[in-house]
Each structure stands twice: as structure tokens, then as C-alpha cells.
Length: 89
Image (cartoon, rainbow, N blue to C red; front, top):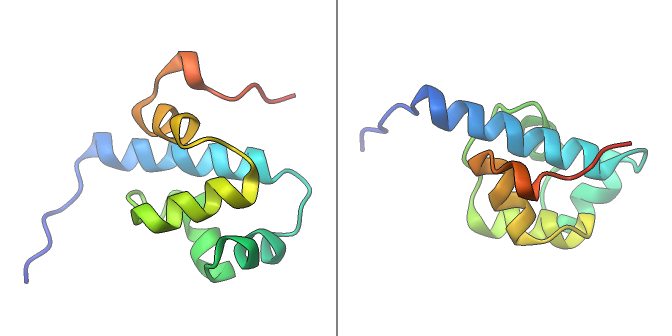
């Protein structure tokens, strides 16, 4: 099976999603959120760093549940929709 390379737009979308996850996690330990989401800490590190620009749907759902964010918010971040961006402060 040959994997089609991701486009620059898809890579940037992954970076935006990673930033949302990182911001939503705040000061909570990475290992705690990973456990709540049902993923490995390394997977969470990679998502936050944008190194997994297109995580699986189940992974995104688990992260949203663990972080208390909506799927709409995650979709907005991935798409770059300004109206659904999380306010960080």
C-alpha cells in the first residue's frame, strides 16, 4: 500500500489541531490526558507537536472527551475556522 503524501494544507491543519489540544490540556499532565483519551503519551506528544497531522477519528473523539472540548471545536481548528477557535488566556 502506497501512502499519498499529505499536502502543505493538511500539515498546517494538523499543527492547528495540535495547538488546540496543547492549549486545552493547559497544566494537566500529558500522561493523565493520554490515559483519559485511551492513547499513548507518545501519540499525544506527536499530535500536540503536529507530527500526526491527521489523527484517527476515534483518537480525536477520545481527546475531545478527555479535554472537555467539542468535536466542532476540533473540526474548526483543523479547518482553520476563526469562529470556532478556542480563546486562550
